[in-house]
Amino acid sequence: MGAFVGEQTYLNYINGEWVASTSGKTIKSINPANRNEIVGLVQASSADDLDQVVAAAKAAAKAWRKLSGSARGDFLFKAANILERRLDEVAESMTREMGKTLPEAKGETARGVAILRYYAGEGMRKVGDVIPSTDSEALMFTTRVPLGVVGVISPWNFPVAIPIWKMAPALIYGNTVVLKPATETAVTAAKIIECFAEAGLPAGVINLITGSGSIIGQGLAEHKDINGITFTGSNQVGKAVGQAALARGAKYQLEMGGKNPVIIADDANLDLAVDGTISGGLKSTGQKCTATSRVIVMRGVYEAFKEKLVAKVQDLKVGHGLEQGTWLGPCANENQLNTVVSYIAKGIEEGAELLVGGARPEQADLADGFYIQPTVFDKVTADMTIAREEIFGPVLALIQVDTIEEAIELANDSDYGLSASIYTQNIGNILSFIQDMDAGLVRINAETAGVELQAPFGGMKQSSSHSREQGQAAIEFYTAIKTVFLKG
Ligand SMILES: NC(=O)C1=CN([C@@H]2O[C@H](COP(=O)(O)OP(=O)(O)OC[C@H]3O[C@@H](n4cnc5c(N)ncnc54)[C@H](OP(=O)(O)O)[C@@H]3O)[C@@H](O)[C@H]2O)C=CC1
Ligand SMILES: O=C(O)CCC(=O)C(=O)O
Image 1 (cartoon, helix red, strand yellow):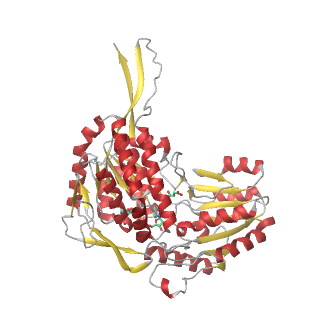
Image 2 (tube, helix red, strand yellow):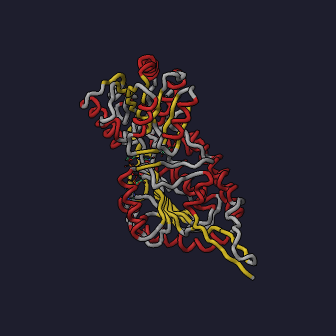
Image 3 (spheres, helix red, strand yellow):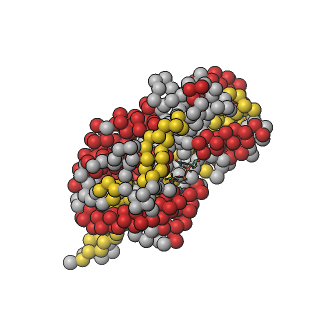
């Protein structure tokens, strides 16, 4: 049996079985492009279900960690092949659940396949170093051991890539996994888990439990048998998850918000800069933690940049993510739409000038979806709310500066430090930016979004718990180092 049991109902996956919650209740996952369309019903799991799922993952941990890395990798290669075969179906489910356009959803699913293959290969790579001992007759080296059971709490904005970039390294380094996905995209999560189930992972090694964040998410963070917890989402929830883990001595990793700046220097290639600002700020309806939000432009090119930007933003086609030609889908849910609308109102109230967008589209066929026009504000100042808080929507704030030093200072004037980019041809500007910008990801002549799976990813300041995900950096979270001193 798969996750889907008819009447659009999807089940939890516990100990190798698809099972309904003991609560007997389900939650609707609806299409943000049309609130009347139900994509699926997912389990509203209870604290009892949580205990069961964690017990299953704990029981499976001993045998899984004993397998060789390459044997674990074989399972990931199989899961990758199955996901690749189901790519179109999984991508369509993502578009229907959270609204991103189908080409973006397909790109993300292909990225999920590539992440699985990357970590499958990790099973064959080194896990330690030999370190000279002061005792000439001893051998001293490091090795790594898994944490045990890892709890994964994932958001809705990258419903395939984020769970996979957390689960794949957890598994390859020998941990078992309990996934609690965002309720918004729990159907897509069930389809991913189906791929792992079909790949034949032993019972209990990978598990899925859906349900409310405050019961299942918080419950995972607090559970005595969860040895490590990895979270991506809002700052508020992330901090609570981290505190719950810290209180009981569990390892935790948090990826949270961003307020990412792009700097447009007066020698920038403006066409490139405009395209990068639009793509970085408005793709996925601005719902990326790496999305461009603050656009810091030097006075010499401000008007020319603004004119080109507005002309292009006006032409972006808002619509249903499954329709060909749509550039910008809806916000992922009604809360998200209301948040964006309230930030736009705040921008106007605080004196920013609306250049384009700012309202819900008027087309009748979009009336039942959570759509908002792509929006650009002019005359934004550093103290305005729209220049300080994460909006997570398609809103760009233009800020004028006189010098590159001022631009970098302003770019750093934020509680967040996830990603940042600059458009310039000047090597001095580039070097200052690389050295002085407080962000975990700095990109030159490229948009702020665009994370590569083989490179470390994470933020400074309030954007993360200061660890890094992805690439080989992932091993730091999902394992513990053991130093071995060996003497005959
Ligand atoms: N860094 C990023 O990539 C993301 C940032 N955000 C930011 O967060 C804002 C709000 O989005 P939202 O979806 O509400 O984000 P949340 O932080 O609430 O959700 C992220 C994940 O945490 C779960 N969760 C919710 N409450 C708790 C809790 N008390 N304990 C443990 N886990 C919990 C959610 O489950 P459930 O879905 O069931 O509530 C979901 O799986 C956005 O506007 C955006 O600013 C959001 C998503 C991704
Ligand atoms: O930009 C990306 O590809 C990833 C962004 C991300 O991790 C996020 O929005 O949570």
